[in-house]
Image (cartoon, rainbow over all chains, first blue to last red):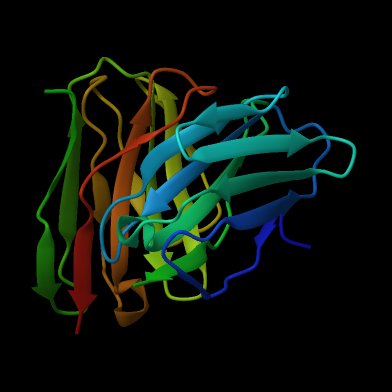
Length: 111
Length: 112
């Protein structure tokens, strides 16, 4: 079983739509969580960290559900510039090989 | 400007010819790591380093070597490259293990 699983998509949504992605993780000891954005053939860039109480940054909202072991990313009022692949990252913080990346969810926002 | 710098950005070479991809960060980060990214497989960790002279294997270390003689540099060495190492490689660093990572621009390697 993969440590981190994401629906690869693609998600094709019209401008202005609200879209949500989920990411499930297998290890209940996971300590920290992040969403990254990756544009085609570019490096991943941190979009936001995910905190236990949930957090918001403009049109983006991230939530953590420890009981069900998933994190989510909600994008409101989608823009064309939101088109990218969104990667979730789970960190066990145990000192061993503890960083796990999802394979990413591809989003295309259509005019 | 805070950054992670990889070189070269692109390289086409032949099987068996040793190559090194350099990675340097100017943020005094302790944690550094190398990833390869292949279609459908996502980012897979090759090696990581918790600090100077401390390195360890990731998920896919076979065929690669690393060193961490200085805090800022973490080169990736392919002693005898093979075609299955053709991939997009990223170096990343973070202040500590718990912090989010900053990625370099990537190195696209083609091994013929």
